[in-house]
Structures are given as structure tokens and as C-alpha cells.
Image (cartoon, rainbow, N blue to C red; front, top):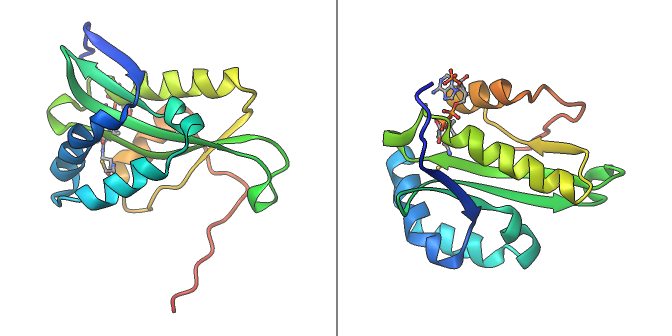
Length: 148
Ligand SMILES: CC(C)(COP(=O)(O)OP(=O)(O)OC[C@H]1O[C@@H](n2cnc3c(N)ncnc32)[C@H](O)[C@@H]1OP(=O)(O)O)[C@@H](O)C(=O)NCCC(=O)NCCS
């Protein structure tokens, strides 16, 4: 891995919207500004402090959205969630996502979280490989769906 020396991790701010939309568009090939506007607005103050961006020389090159929850889904403790992670394609494979995830894990640990969940599509090979590299394993919960 070719890591970056001048990488800075900081809390996500409302002004990061355009940078996040740009990264998301480069990764997925679709502009989803409305979606991201709604998503960032709906994040409460607590989770926005947990959500982070990675900067290189003032440019946002990656982000991670994290959240904390209590008893949802019958999980009997405070758990953390990784909602979304994205790294600008030109900055991938340089340790940006690792730095974001380590900082998020540190922040979640500091507020008492013992387990972190995330959901990844079976087809998202890069994300599966990344979470595997971070130490995530298959959990006890299973994903159920009903097509209507
Ligand atoms: C998955 C993703 C977050 C990884 O970001 P990254 O900054 O490149 O990851 P890192 O450099 O920290 O990689 C850490 C480890 O994860 C694994 N990994 C990361 N990307 C990988 C890939 N494309 N293929 C295989 N393994 C991968 C490797 O083990 C890697 O360690 P190594 O470089 O020593 O081999 C990035 O590829 C991405 O943003 N993908 C799109 C995700 C997405 O669809 N998000 C929603 C919309 S934005």
C-alpha cells in the first residue's frame, strides 16, 4: 500500500456535501445530489460527529458515515453502524479508507460501543475485501427481504 503522508481525518461538515456528491458520482457513475442532501440533513448532531472525511491538502478525498443505535433489531447494547464509505477513485488503495475506519472505530469505542455492524451487497467485492481487511466477519444476524 502506497500510503499518504499528508492525510487528515476530520469530522464531516454540512459544507462537505458537494465533495461527497462528486466522489459518489465518480464511484457509482450517477449524480445523487438530492439523495445526499436529504441524507446529510437527516443525520443528527451525534452521528454527524461520528461521520468523518479524509482530506489531502484541503481536498476531500473520502468519507465514512457512522451511526450509533440502542435497542433496534433486539440488539441488547449500544452498537455502531458503518452506513457508507467512499474514496475518490484516484486516491484508492492508499490507506484512506483504513484511516477513516480506524478513526471511526476509535470514536465509537470512546462512547462505549462494543460491536459495529455494516451491510454490504454480495456483489460489492471491493467493499467486502476492505471490510474483511479491517477484521469484520460474518455476524449472527441475517438479512431478510420480501419483494413486493
Ligand atoms: C472499498 C473502498 C472504500 C476502499 O478504499 P481504499 O481507500 O482504497 O482502501 P484502503 O487503501 O484503505 O485498503 C485497505 C485494504 O482493503 C482491501 N481493499 C481495498 N480496496 C480493495 C479492492 N478494490 N480490491 C481488493 N481489496 C481491496 C485491501 O486488503 C487493502 O489493503 P492493501 O492495499 O494493503 O491490499 C473504496 O474502494 C471505495 O470507495 N469503493 C466504492 C465503495 C462504494 O460503492 N461506496 C458507496 C458510494 S461512494
